[in-house]
Amino acid sequence: MRHVLAALALVATVCIAAPQSFAAEAGTSASTPPASELAPPADTYTAAPGDADTPPPFVSRPKLPPWPKGPDMTYAVRPAPTGFRNLSWGTSLKQAAATFGLVPVTSPRPLRDTYYRPDEVLKLGMADIRTVAYYFHKDAFNGAGIVFSGEANFFLVKDHLIELYGPGRQVGDHYGWTWSKVNIDLHLKDGMGELRFSYEP
Image (spheres, rainbow, N blue to C red):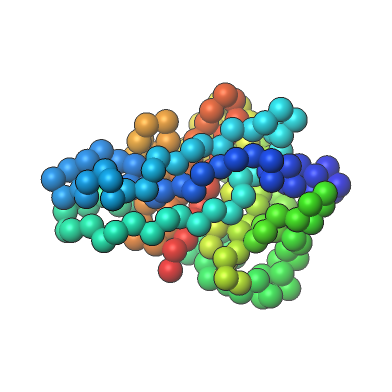
């Protein structure tokens, strides 16, 4: 357990810019607002040396200005997930901790809004994963971050998500699904993979 806590805490040393929605990373269209109105491109998670078991920290997605009506950019053909691993979006921290035994990351230093399950199953479909982090913002569950390693696990994770949600969309080196309130982003860089679920009510 100390290894997991220490690995989670190492994320405090990783500098990550706020991610923007997967849909916002897509190509422009006639209805897309000028580039100056969009959030800057999101940095991607890159594990530091000795940081292979560290999930990304919770980072709020920036609020973008309203877009005029245009082509459907949601990319998802099946319903959005209503939560993650039986924990519904919007669940209060108190209820989640009591039901799922969530523990705050406090050692060697605390990570704000970040929790883990000591009994976490480190599998996603057929893929082996390293860590799972649960994020709470204003006392409500609104995201999860998963770290895994290797290209084989990347494709196993991707296949699992396609089976659940249908084909996603490739945007640059990201693959993902976007609904009106839920975003799933999958990325592999230098052998390390990150899967991020985020929810905005």
